[in-house]
Amino acid sequence: MWQSYIGLGSWTKLDASVNALEKLFKEGDFIAKSAIKGAYTLGRRIAQLAIIIRNGLENSREILKEDPSFEFVLNKISSNTDGEVLSND
Image (cartoon, rainbow, N blue to C red):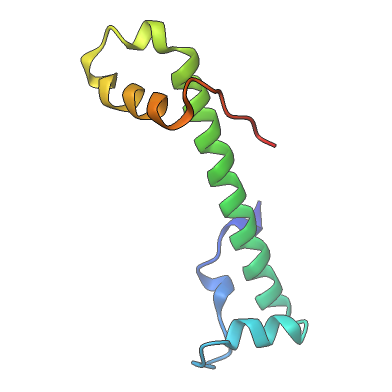
């Protein structure tokens, strides 16, 4: 999805003010709107991937606990969720 790239999309027409992107967005500037949508899309994808990884680790606990390299992460997810598997809601 093209909105996932925010590097060039955050161009602010050489306006270095703190609220330049916000101002351009409110004016309806296409590039500013694309940058905001891209940031939102990227953040959502990161959260979804984190949920997939956490649930995969939790659901594979019995297999992974035999490998010492997974001990830290398995203990970490247990202490944060009390065994509750997260959803994408």
